[in-house]
Length: 84
Image 1 (spheres, rainbow, N blue to C red):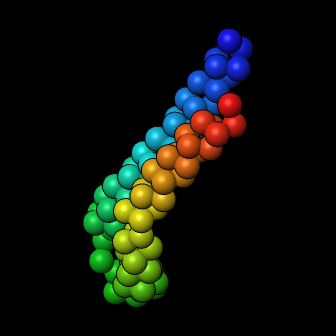
Image 2 (cartoon, rainbow, N blue to C red):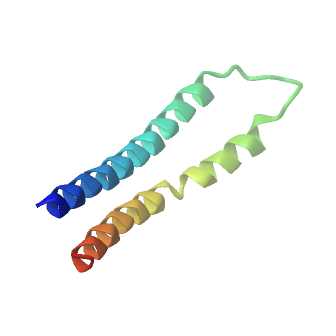
Image 3 (tube, rainbow, N blue to C red):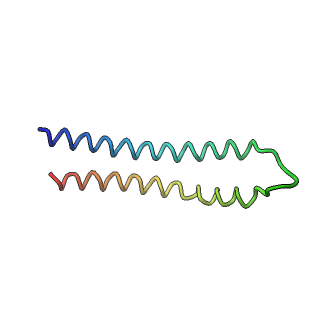
């Protein structure tokens, strides 16, 4: 009985960490969009265009990261079935 409780607790920790990772990624994208759109246009200093385009291309990988997180969750669940 203790093994079943431990396995369920482990599954919940794994699931919670995956959900937290996905929510953190989504919130990061939303915060970046809000901050970037509210920045004033500057005539001198740092040119934002390369920075924004680099971060934008990195955020294009966000759906792939979410798919990898779901796949990792599925693999963790499948491997826990085998260990019993």
